[in-house]
Image (tube, rainbow, N blue to C red; front, side):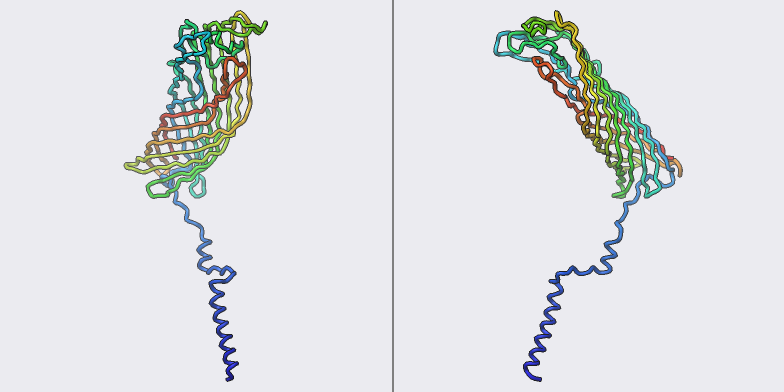
Length: 390
């Protein structure tokens, strides 16, 4: 065989082998997956096993809970007390005051939950109704003080200045001898849930829940001041400085609120011994809320303008976040195939953002300058529940 032909065959063979080696790891095309990989990728993921207490105990359940809570609302302080007399004409003033924070009562409430098991993968649906009423205790509702010498007495925090007082250091500041205030709230909430209990671990069953929360609250703030001191102000009739005395001053505000929004949560149940478990529950909601706020002022000022009244109304919408949590103990037992009894005792906590929208007057020398309190609501206390599954 001639030398040139032999050399040509060797070159062609070498090129073919090199192309095969290079085209494998450096191919521009993505290699097709193997049949085993296709089958593995298309398989569904494992479903966590159900964590219902037992099978065959019924399709409906009812839970009734007695609540013993205390609610606290921020921004309800209605009076401070001044212990230092005023020194008219002095550029230096000394203040010594005590702020009276309302004392909130412990009140009972009630919660009812009705639910049923769905015929799909052990899911369940439930609706819960909670009703609760709160008010201040009688401990810090009423205060008295002397108003002499000038500067000593109770400082009103919910007083609207129908008469513009002097803004310099010539006149005496407004003080009252008596102050009274109270706050009441009625709360109704409805929780609609779709959930499933499952086992992430053999001894820790959990329940994931999604749904909606509907809430309606009614609030009423009442503040009254009496036995006011004389102050230097601008006469509304003549426009000249004159002495005035506020005989009484009343402030009432009513707030109607309702909201609806999504709610998600997770409940856990840590088995310990003898059917007793440690429970930890949490949920978070965001409500699209509507607020209707009505404020009324009613003052008696002598010698004029006499009886002075004013009414303000506000209607607005905003988002209201709500955080809920509970920690406690649970005990349950299946007495037959169609009856299950569970008992829970826990400490529950709820926090509602920006639920108090009463407006406070900013400064007594500027009538009409008000500020929205935007106070938060906190509720906490005991929760004792009995559950029947049948």
